[in-house]
Amino acid sequence: MKKNIWENVYYRLKDPVEIKLAILYVLFYADIPVSDVELKHCMLEGTSVDFLELCNIIEELKNENHMKTVWRDEMDKYVLTSSGEDMITMFENKLLASVKNSLKDAIDQYYKNETSRKAIRCDVQPVGDGMFCAELELKEGKNSLLAISLFAGSKKRALSMCRKFREDPYGFYEKLSALLESEEN
Image (cartoon, rainbow, N blue to C red; front, side, top):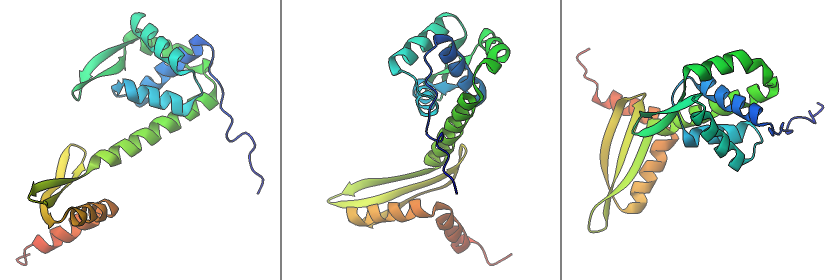
């Protein structure tokens, strides 16, 4: 099988207008409010752009009223304004297809990882005199499927419990549910 020699070649965004369009495209494609960190992560992951120039252009887009900040999930996040939506709709075809695809991949991967990361919470909590418990939580969206605090004794055992839970949280949930199901059915 022949290796694609262009596989790891990035298109360097240098033109400020292209960078603006790429930023607007990220907000347009994500279709949800995006934090500053998320926007910069997706831009840097999906393209090759100078970080300082990226920061300046984000500010320019806010000053030009193409995007604005809104308060969501206890933090400021960016959304497109109507002029920003109009701009990306009119000029989306000016972005190279490879840049759009790379940005799409970066956004999809980021939110896939972020969703799975937020779905599982494992904390080791001290309960006194060198004793610890493992606090485990499994969420689906905003709904908590499981929230449990298990006494572990030692910190080492609590860490081990957390590690095992992270390996197969849904399996743990199913086994615990099966143990608690009634025989009346």
